[in-house]
Length: 90
Image (cartoon, rainbow, N blue to C red; front, side):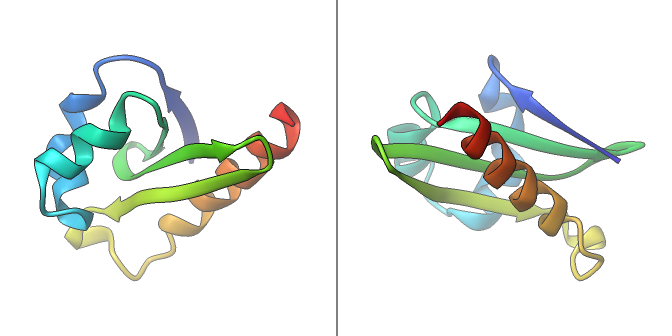
């Protein structure tokens, strides 16, 4: 299992982003300024996007796991990676 930070071509994950946020217009409002984390376990299982709202506040904007992998805990390591990454960055 590996969590990768996605720096470019974030729209390639639009199908998964739309599972958690049904409006592409809303996704466009945070996608470029947010950090995207993708969890792979052989293949892509889950993604999340986090934005920095202030110097000490981040917001989880989107977290989604492909339907066939839901309920198997794939969102938890992704969320934990975000927390660890934020602690390192700050």
